[in-house]
Image (cartoon, rainbow, N blue to C red; front, side, top):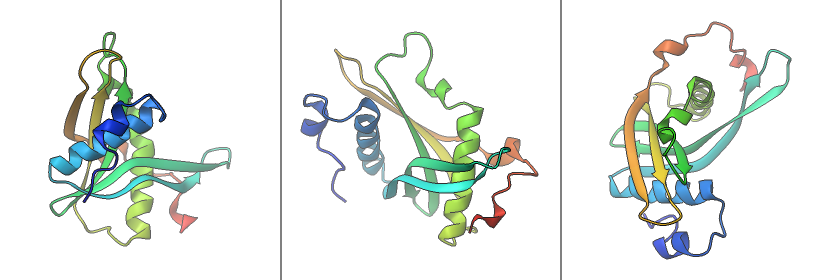
Length: 155
């Protein structure tokens, strides 16, 4: 598979928002790590909140690592001086990705395929080298068992 964006495009004057540039770098990094990119920026309605308002979920990258389906959250920052970038993948974000992954697996009939949740952090300082880090299996669904997500009737 070809790269998502070339390094020249990434390092040229910022035509893309920081997050989009980081996601392109992350996708290229994952390809080099042996992942096969299935889709980027997957968005789908995942249910309704407690007030009945439709909720849309997004997953930055869905990929295959061998036979494992991987849902990847990408976080890009200019600095990690005050806190590690990965801390922004908080419980709320993890829950939202789990809901979206659940809908994805149901839509495409891959409920019995092994899967996990990875995080790629991209540090893109204004001056200096870009750093990319992959954390495999950053979280699991075990701590998010919630009886009333109200998303079963969406498909």
